[in-house]
Image (cartoon, rainbow, N blue to C red; front, top):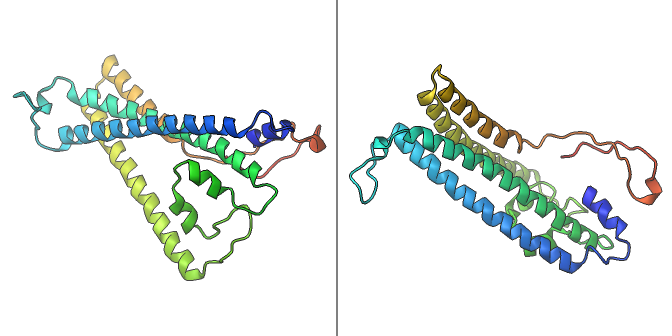
Length: 237
């Protein structure tokens, strides 16, 4: 909403230009690259931690040592996986923020027509288009050309729920490995306790940052016709 109002202030279109949009697209690609890097780090750390906690001792290539022979390996991998999870959560938020700004450019461009701006955004930024294709209303900005029947709605609603549950199970696997790492570390002395608290905070912050709760906002200022008027818009996030 804020970006849309900022664009309204640029009445001549001299600031929010196509060139600026391209710069945001370039920054979005950098954010996606960072996000992908964090995904790889998290998968490696989680897999190594799971092998250490639940699997057999795996030898390190080129040495006679196994993972379980490394001092404090559980603690190191637990901390690494937790930090990677936090970094991934924040990188995801950053990527989505850039995506939201780019979408406002396309919404502004198609405002005078009935064209769905999602198709412009998807041409320059990788999007999970199946989320758009499978939802009951494909075009949230206007009327759909084709209305899905009840069979389509039920089937793909089930598919989307299964996708969500699948990703939730991955999160639960990560949290299970982290919990096992904390359990193996916890003691009454201050250092292990501090370690466990830090690991808990990193994972809790990563989860809470992406819960996407809805909150009310009071409109302090918007386009000129609403200057000085306080409005309470619908719940948003």
